[in-house]
Amino acid sequence: MIIVNTIQEIRNYVREQRAQGHTIGFVPSMGYLHEGHQSLLRASKERCQTTVMSIFVNPLQFGPNEDFDRYPRDLERDAKLAEAAGADIIFAPSVDEMYPRGNGQVLTHVDVEEVTLQLCGASRPGHFRGVSTVVSKLFNIVQPDQAFFGMKDAQQVAVLQTMVDDLNIPVEIVPCPIVREPDGLAMSSRNVFLTPEERQQALVLSQALQQAEQLVQAGARDVHQIKEAVRDMIQSQPLADIDYVELLNFRDLSPILSLEQPALLALAVRFGKTRLIDNTVLTID
Amino acid sequence: MIIVNTIQEIRNYVREQRAQGHTIGFVPSMGYLHEGHQSLLRASKERCQTTVMSIFVNPLQFGPNEDFDRYPRDLERDAKLAEAAGADIIFAPSVDEMYPRGNGQVLTHVDVEEVTLQLCGASRPGHFRGVSTVVSKLFNIVQPDQAFFGMKDAQQVAVLQTMVDDLNIPVEIVPCPIVREPDGLAMSSRNVFLTPEERQQALVLSQALQQAEQLVQAGARDVHQIKEAVRDMIQSQPLADIDYVELLNFRDLSPILSLEQPALLALAVRFGKTRLIDNTVLTID
Image 1 (cartoon, chains in turn yellow, green):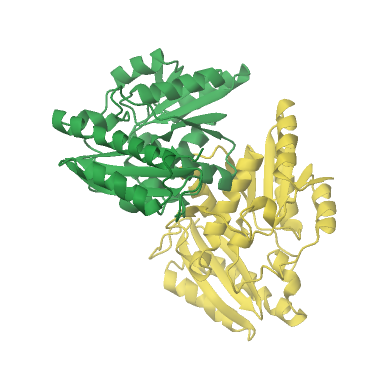
Image 2 (spheres, rainbow over the protein chains, first blue to last red; image 1 turned 135 degrees about the horizontal axis):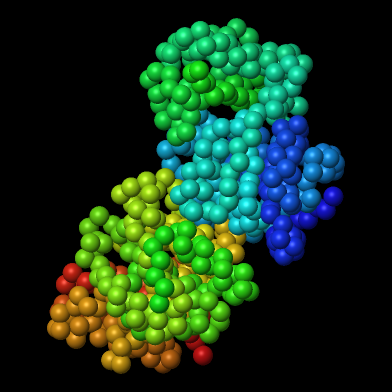
């Protein structure tokens, strides 16, 4: 596994691959890889001839009281998992390499409106500005043909698709399905923070989403009713502290009054210090 | 002269040129070309094998009370002038082609801070956000190696250089010298709006800049004194209405107390409805 740390090195590598006529797939990540990331690498491997993974815990997308410092990092372990899933190279820059003005500072931001108002955009001010800015930088550095993102952060996919459309960025965004543990918990680098008890109670998230799917199959169309059923089920777990449960238009994340097809049921819930997100797209057969 | 109106067409053209091993030079413009634009095209022609010019009056960079509607447009004339100066192709998209959400609307903006606080950034709120957003789009559409900008808008050059640096945009910004009429007036598409009397009085702008250069050569170092000398001279013309006269650090446009090297002496002055800008870089021998 090749690991490079500088923009110049990854650009040289990509230029060589391009010169051989290779298409470039790209999986940006914050590292501490799990099956979800590996599924993105496999999707890239299937569609592109060269697969670049970036591993960069981006300070710009963390709020002042968030978990930037304690976010898990293990590049050696990541390199093995990335290689096993088909990555050709890892770009793992330092904060100073990405933000040479120092302290993670930039004077230029990429700002996406409207689709950032709801969900995590509402509870994490500045988060998506940090995401769209760093992804914009990474796209300019790697210049991939396709970039692969997990649907676990459905809002991130919507934000980046909007950014790519609006700025005519020549990269295709490829959303990939959520990968879950056998018991249903959505894979997340943050799952390692859960105590055994929190881990057990966190199963309620995927169960509540499943319950909502069943309600809709049984004919439920009322947005408020569906959200309340999800909230009730989550609140049955004493360690669960709901940040949001929302049901929105899937494409542009605008509010809906009754269930349209497709609609995004998304939630964020804290267990202790750990904030987990999960979602499902509700469709009417 | 090839003129194309769609993003797909210009991308196809650039792809063909690249396949032939050509480097791509790019001159973005709002059209109504003059010698200044032609000098940019010649600079591109000298350094790159293919020269693309865009002509697009960008609604996003005009304020609500500015001259978007009356900005001069003449594509037929522009095509001749562009061809004469060495352009290979003109990309002249419609507003809807660039902003398909309608009404020049985008949800994504590229925002540059600090260097946009002074000068035109202060008197034209939102202007540089419109500039950096559209240039970012045009760079993503054309994907040039080098892009050529006139130093008449020195702040625009500073803003775009900051954007390119911060977002790792793989385009080299090439600043080119101001081109002047024989009597000293800086070339501008807006000069056509001047009445003969305004046109005559507008000569004071380049004269005031020259006077400042002479003051500095004679030993003046006090920023306030130099600015006041420029203001006094401009105000000697009854039709001149000063928007700003500023003397700033040339690179980052930060305020300076005494003359450093190099420093940007920049001014914006209205004559009737027409707002003109001009500047010079003051250096100490």
